[in-house]
Length: 410
Image (cartoon, rainbow, N blue to C red; front, side, top):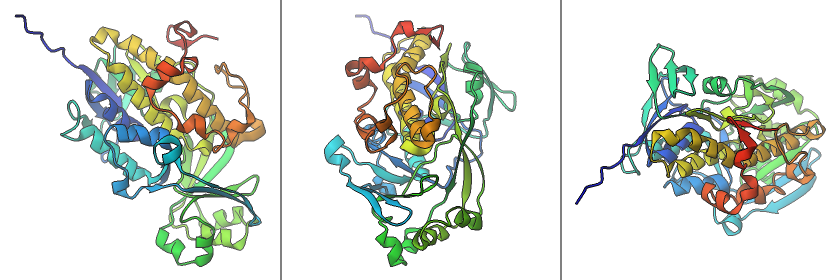
């Protein structure tokens, strides 16, 4: 009786060990031998916050992840005030009942730590991912599946996954037409220890200890929660006096909240049109490399995690390196419309009247209600993963004829 020889696993290189790259590692390790290249000497996420809606939290749980062990907190309420202190709305949230999974508020460092654990644990599916630090990619040959490191080392794989963010070296090889521009918006970002908030009853009364709280000043707002800012940014050190000056028209209690800030970052939020190509040859870009988003839907990290899960879903069927270019194009077709919709909804929420028709998005102008995160939550949060999306939401998957030579037609 002939014994079947087990097929050799594909070799995949992931560029970038941020949230997106590590999520790709967690998703792909069962189906391939994965190496993750990271430019820095130590994996260290920025000290900021992120909220993961059920669409992303569900996928992390599916890989065996547990964010509660790090202190993740379920979001139970969304509240918005005017800058004069009037409550515009207060919406109870129970995503566990509505979508089957909690909407959790987390620290980005903790999300990255858990994804690193999932990508590298010895008891996970397949082999642990190999993470190589001090390995900055400076060039990529997308057709041949090669990357060149800063020290001159050339590495080859069956597939290259560019998860290296807004300044992606991989994207430059896949789609050199990328450009971004200032959105006219900037964001101060900082963390305040909960103990400091609890020392002030008037701050506790705002609800910031138990809900996603927004204070709307029309042309500026305060968002008090564990909130995500996308990698679509340029950053500088922020100044407390300038921060308070920017919000001097708000109530004293709101300025008191801002005055609790310790280390402050100032981020220029940048706008970009959807890209018409994510994949070329043996290479694909995902996450912020492919569809960096303004932060107004809080879905930047979630979209990256969805990309990662889609890669795992598609590569589950891989049997030969020869299939890789077609598999990567399938990922692009599967993810493009949904990621672009969320990207454009984020632009609509952030840019208002500046929102323009999306180039390359067949849906044209978005309905106005899609700019509101809570009204858009069914689309955002009910997502079950790539398998369900491909089978049950075919209208959101690009047909093969919509892509020619890897580029979106029209």
